[in-house]
Image (cartoon, rainbow, N blue to C red; front, top):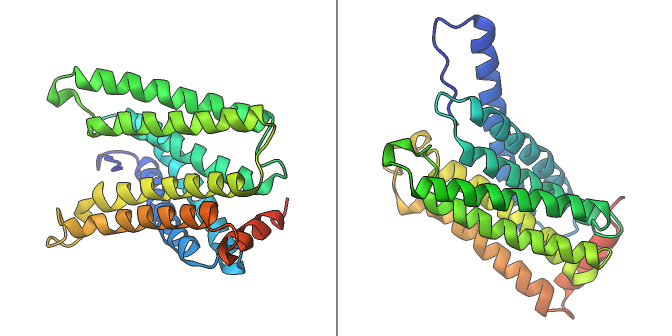
Length: 250
């Protein structure tokens, strides 16, 4: 996200644009760093919880700023708007999953379900429009991204509906819901930074496959923890994770 403000703009406008951009970048950096720590740290440990708190706040700030500002860029980017809303949704629902005794059931689940449906419908609409638009009319969002986000949001909506109909979620399913949503939000932030802003890296890294390593590491960590949680039920990691969720402050 680049805020272009002319030199002839009032100083208040230029200062506000610089502040917004700084907050967005700082929140994104803190979100990626704290998310990485949360993935590496022992689940349920004080370090894991502190990193999770930082991740929650910074990611909400980053995604909210991106979603609000993107329509007002010199070239409005509606893909960023939907991406920001979806990231906000993922972090919020993941947080609610561990903060509420029912894992985010009831009205929280139906609200999340409706939000995810809006993301699905909007991404599909934008994707179809982009597929039929002239190359110069695109806003910079890769065409496949619309349909990838729509698919992810549809899966998330199905999970929200299941939680609502089941009046909550507990045990391994609750851990899984929290885990994959946080990791996907972190993955979106990593893609946005490492692949979406190549100009901030040295020239020898721009376009390098090395910029895919953080994303691969996040996906690998997600797969690892999902396997540990769902299939190593008698192991210490799975048991420790369930105890940690049970002791989360409400």
